[in-house]
Image (cartoon, rainbow, N blue to C red; front, top):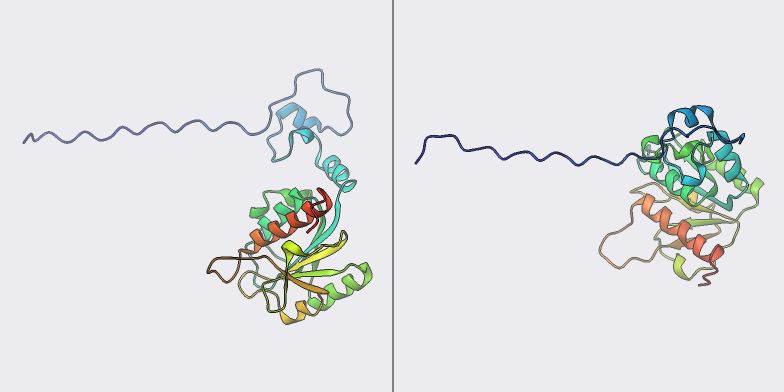
Length: 219
C-alpha cells in the first residue's frame, strides 16, 4: 500500500446567489412623487413586489391603506411567541386591516422580514383592554382553536368584516380569550398531532377568508 496521503476531495464553489431586487434606476429618473431618490440612486433590494420598486416606504403604506381587507387578526402573546413575526408577514401578504398583539408587547420581529413596516400592528396589554377595543369596533370575533364544540372553518361562512383571534403556540386560547369570541372555529386535521403551528394556522385561516370574499368560494 502506498504511504502517500489520500487526496482530499475538491470543494466545489458555491453557486452565486442571484441579487434580490433591482439596481440603480437609469437616468433620467421618472417624475413620480412616490419614488425615493435614495432607492433610485442606489437600487432597491427590499422584499417588495415589483410594482412597488423604488417607492418610498410611506408611499407603499399609503397605497396599501386604500386596499386593505376588512379583517383583523389577533394573537395572544404571554410568553413572547416566536411565531408572531411570521404571522405579521403573512398578514401583510393577505393585506389584513390590522394585527392585534394581546399581552406582552415584545415579539420577534426578525420573522416579519421587515413587513411590519407596511402592516398596521396594535398592542393591547391585556384581554380586558382588547375586549374594550372589540366593543368599540362592533366586529364579530372568530376564535380559532381546536376545542370541543368548535366548528370546522372549511364549512363556516366567514363574515366579511371580522376579527380572527388565535391563542399562543402551545397552550392555545386562554379561557378569558374564548369568552370574547362569538364563535369558535377549528382547522380540520387528519394526523396524530394535537395542533398546527400558530403561524401556519393563521395563514390557513386568512386564506379561507380570501377564498370566500375575494374569489367567492362559498362553503
